[in-house]
Image (tube, rainbow, N blue to C red; front, side):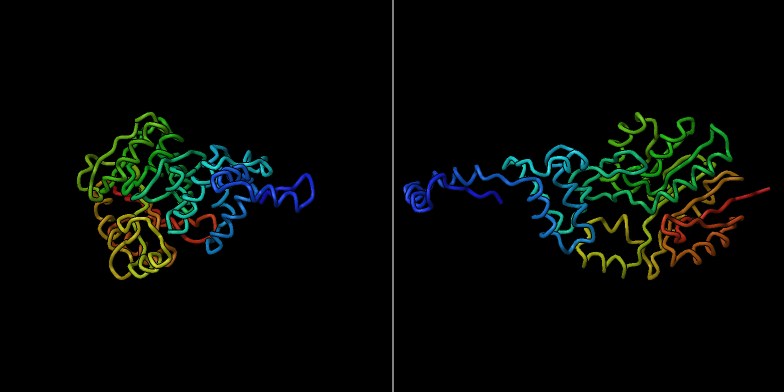
Length: 313
């Protein structure tokens, strides 16, 4: 923190300070402004239980300052206005309570684009990049005018990324959550100019037509895993995380028959799932009639994406 240094001797300084009333002392305190470096240090200490305290504090302070992180680090010695410090400290408290940083700042970057997110919706995660990569490769097999649907779309992570990467495709999305719908529509406008059709649907019940490709990042945590994350103060909704049944695969078990009916005769289904569930998911796909069943690893080299084709004669 800044210190006040007396121009004369300390005894004279003390005599002067003794004459300042409480109001003036409060005004004086407001002049002792916190620097960017000090604010970051305070936040890191407060969030020392976080896995990423340095990143979290930088994102929260940059948001309060309306700067990106790079410019924030260029201003470490600069003082912060008290209104910024107040906003930043409130953000830190929200983070300590378990809210994702993305909810607090209102956005999450994924595949080079900012997605609007907030309370009640699942935040895009790096693991899902493996599903994007696999989907883009699969899309190349069908040409430029095929149809793709994203089931359990959340804020639009898959559908809108793929629509931006392949603007010639006919892409739609669905989710059961009204909150997800709000964020999807917001992101649909900012990322794809509103070109992706949305359906409110329990899985694929209310989605018309068939598709060359169906992609999905459904909830797949086991109830025990979700309970553990709740103890760790995770705030993201059960609807987006808890897959149901003892093994977390209730939603996927229900989705696979729908996907079989909704894919064209040479269509492809791509599912994100947990590596511990991959063997069972591949079996479920085989039992449903899918062929050429494979999986892809995520960035950490862990099995993450199941891929299956319908392949009817």
